[in-house]
Image 1 (tube, rainbow, N blue to C red):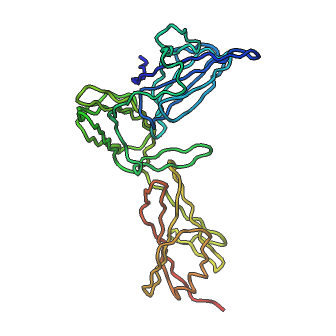
Image 2: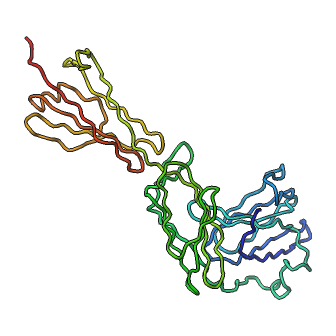
Image 3: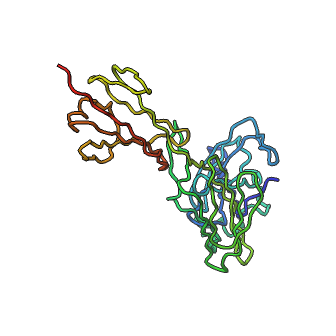
Length: 327
């Protein structure tokens, strides 16, 4: 069943007119919420459904705003509106019921007479509400096409609820379509398996005040990339599946990652003499001749890949035994 937003709002509707223009509607909305909260307002020509996923065929006019008040002038044919709260990490609250923009001056939603003559008004002080916070350093945003995908970079998510008045009674959360779980105060939720997740959560304080349900969509990536070697130039396959290379041969590393995507391929060389280089990013094909001149003998190459969330491939190696130069 669809739930309603828990915040309360008051709607003021004024009708302004002049001799040479049509009456002008002014819709003033005052929301019982924090002054720095974010909201989304929809103005509709036809009333949208409140119980089904379907909506009216004509699209709404959408206005996003910050703060607990807004004044708008609806167009003549926009007769309905509704509001919902916007949370952190792209979370969206539930819509309010659908209201008419043509508020009857005598209805409970209209502005009291004592406010009509005032140019400005101040909302009543709103007490701080219970909130649950998730640290931003828990996620990595990976840009894919036109949108960013949120990846969890840790093995768990910690909900840190706070309340300045009575204190926290419980934290409730649900993963995907599972059952609601309840925990006390600080809560760490493990996510060890790879996949896509939808986390719903809210807190309740000791006075019974319930936080609006927050929704967090993210992906868990636990698998490291896989790197393969491609030989560029002349090569010959010998006994024991051994590759014989010419001085013109080059080495190319190609890596693939199925989730967050490849970040880097790193490689290092170790000469027969014991000299070892630092790991550095692979960017261009590696020349066998250059490595031979650098090492003055046989050498090894170590390599591995890293994805966007920090999963590292197990280090692999290639052994090169150089033959004598022929004249």
